[in-house]
Length: 211
Image (cartoon, rainbow, N blue to C red; front, side, top):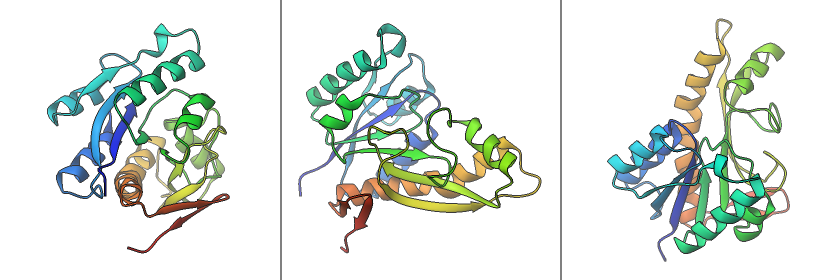
């Protein structure tokens, strides 16, 4: 099986990137290789994580493009030049336009810190997600890994994991627990399934094929 070349798109600290780097170090990415880390911001700590792991880092600054679409077109060009097979959004704060989805159908993954379709879509990112969950009084939250479609947080769901909400939770404590118990486990597992060619999409449903 040919090696799957992965690009991880980031904007900040890169904790989900680190989970992927650690999984790759343990040989748990299904034969995939993180070939590039691309940041929408210069100076993102995620780029330091990439450098420490010996992974090439690139900056495509959002503020240097007139629109999300202009940045998306430049990103697709970069991904093609790097021969990327799978794109993983790991805390990337840019809403990309349809050019990316057209170039990589069912080959772009995102991790979202809630159980989609709850607390997702425009405006639901970072701590806003956990603030909304606590405000609503849910007893369970969690994380979702999904394929990216044109609809924000609306693509077919690959994997989900629930995390209990505690009565004394703050947005920060809930965010941390969902990262540790769900995001950092789910994302490498989903990437490995893709790299092993074990994901099939039928309508809105993602089928996980047996080994």
